[in-house]
Structures are given as structure tokens and as C-alpha cells.
Image 1 (spheres, rainbow, N blue to C red):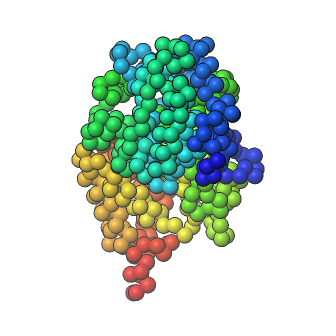
Image 2 (tube, rainbow, N blue to C red):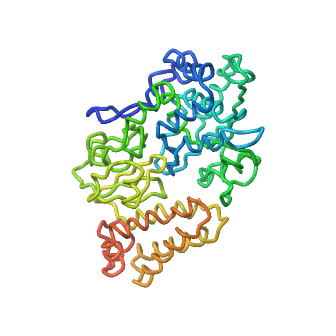
Amino acid sequence: MASDAVGALPDENGKQRLIVLENAGMIDPEDIESYMAVGGYATFNDVLQSMTPPEVIDQIRNSGLRGRGGAGYPAGLKWSTVGKALGAQKYVVCNGDEGDPGAFMDRSIMEADPHRVLEGMMIAAYAVGASQGYLYVRAEYPLAIKRLKHAIKQAEKHGLLGHNISGTPFSLSLQVRLGAGAFVCGEETALLASIEGRRGQPRPRPPYPAESGLWGCPTLINNVETYANVVPILREGAEWFAGIGTERSKGTKVFALSGRIARTGLIEVPMGITLREIIYDIGGGIPDGRKFKAVQTGGPSGGCIPAAHIDTPVDYESLKQVGSMMGSGGMIVMDDSSCMVDVAKYFLEFCMTESCGKCVPCRVGTAQMHGLLEKICEGEATLDDLEMLEELCDMVTNTSLCGLGQAAPNAVVTTLHFFRDEYMAHIVDKTCPAHVCPVSRKEAVQ
């Protein structure tokens, strides 16, 4: 048995609930028989033999599952749109282009339980009428790619992929496509362009991929974790899944817990759990006796949530209310040794570097914002620069072409909102309270 599969952190306080990660570390990801021994592909066979495509879509819709890739769009509504779309050819696509700093949820799922992802895609393809699918995985994930390709071959040998599966009219082929590491290819229209062999850049929407996706055909695109939720929903029922979480955020969410925290790693928690429970009960709190300062959720496009909001429930709506987002599941904890201006500069630099350059607001706006943040960290900025930074945040948010550009200023916006005193210390007092930024070295010399 392959021994490098990553499972969830130990659940010492009973705060986790493993649904997506239920097989991680428990089965051999390179052996289809190991997956079938725990019920793998039984749900897919049951669906093929006893359910119509609309009945499958109804189950997903009634479960309340929302896309786990970031935006939280209702999965059932997306499936229904693709299912109703006209077209002889339809596609299913799995977004495995996980590019957030500190995030490794999807990589771990693909490495630890590749057949679960395939089975979710198979059920989705049956539901929407697709006969071909692609798993788009970044090339930096060689083990995940190897195991997915191996899993596809095993499924083909067992007659789970190919023509007239299990004696039904349903046929499906799946292929793995490699991404070159561009962050923007996590955006669905850029990802589809990359699969088509074109430069990975987003395009204006509508039309949405559900109506006009790969090669102009209706295309269902969900991320790895979303597909990994499909089997348990069909196996246990929509009502069971809808009973987990909050009123509008159902089920569980996998997070990659990292940063200044005692225990780092993967966790899977029910929606609605608080940040405090995650950081202290599961993560073991802040090491070395330091004080918790903030947690960043939602990847580089997310926001920084301060200690005053540590009791915020982790669900789509609550995180949005405090200026952040769920994102794909990165969660970076910071203690009082972190400078929040420096943190904002770090995430903004990532967004600037990864901008595809197609639209001016993102390409030029993020570069100008980064330059202003550098001036602030150097102690060379003025209050006029701060005002310009805030205007640029608004411009980039409201005029960028795609969601990645529109969300790029979030780390700056939230740190300006919650930690404005630190910006003022750099600009007015010419000091960095955390002694991180270059302005502190200048202060020491003087």
C-alpha cells in the first residue's frame, strides 16, 4: 500500500467530520480493489441502474452542495443548466489547478483518493449527458497526476469508463491535462482555454461555460473537492448532507491549515464551526506563547480576519461579511510578530505577478498598488499615497475582467480596515510596530 497519502489532522476534540477525506490514508490509492473494498463505484453503479439524470441532479440540488472552488455557486443549479443545455456534445471538467499559497487540499485528495474524484465525475457526466471529460491538474503535482492516470486505466479495465458502461447507453472517456502553473488558469474560462490548447486567459461572461464551454459546447466544471462530495451525497441522500452545516452553507469544508499555529495540515470541518475552534481546538493554538493576530482565508485573493472576529462562523456568508471569502480552502494563521502591511504586500505581489495581463486594471493597477505598498514599508509614503492606494483598490475591484483581478485587492482592503493603525505607523511615525519592514532598519540606524 502506498504510504504517502495525506489524511486529516488527529481529531482530539471531536471537531472534525470526515466526508471528503474519509478514505484518505485508509486505502491504497493505487489499487482500485482497495477503493472498491470500501464501497467504491457501488454508488456509480446504483446511479446508472436505478436513477434518471434529472433524479441525480435533484439530489445534488436538494443537498445544498455549493462549489468548493471559491465562489460557492450552487452545484445543483450548475448541473441543471448543463443538463438542459442543447448540444450533441457535452463535457465535464475537473479543476485541479490549485495555485493558492499554502493550499494543498485538492492535491491531497487526488493523491489519497483518486477514484473518489473519478467516480464523482462519472456521476456528474451521467447526470448532465456528457461523454467526455478532462481533469486539469497543475504539472507541479506529479504524484497526483500519476495516480489519476493510473486510476483512469484501472477504471477502464473494469469497464467503468468507455462505451456502454455496465450495459447501459452511457459512455464516458476521461483524460488528464497538465497545467503549466499559471494561477489564472484556476479561473474557469482561462482553464478551458488552456485545455483547448490556447493561452490561458479569462474571457468575458456570459456566455458561461455551462452553455458555451469547451469548443463552444456545454461544459460542467467543478473543482476536485466538489466532485469528491458527490459520492457520499448520492450514497447517503441529499437530506443527510443538507443536515450538516448552516442554513445556506451545507456539508463540510477541507482546509489546509498553515502559518503560525501549533499543528499544521489538512482538516475537514462542518460548515459553521468558528475560527476559534479551528485555530485552538484543532490547530492547538499559537506556539511559543505568542498572541493570535489574524487569519487569512480564501487564498491570495482573500482577506485577513483579526482577533476581534475569531468567533466568526466559517461559512460562505459569514466570511464575506468580514471582508474575506471561503476560497478553495487555504487558511494561514498569523501571530503578533507579523506586520499586516507586509502581509498585504506579500499577497498583492503574488496577484500582481500572476496577473495574466489581459485587462489593464489588473495588470497595471496591481503593479501600482504594489509600488505604493513598497513605499509604505520603506517609510517613504505620504498620506496622499495612502489615499491613492485606496482609490486603486476600488478601481481594480470594480473594473477588472475576471474574479481573480476583482478580488486581488482584498488583502489590502481588509488590512486597511482592521489594521489601519499599522499603516499610519509606517507613514506618519516612520516605524513598523512588528519590526519587520525596512523602515524599522532605517529607524535603528537613526
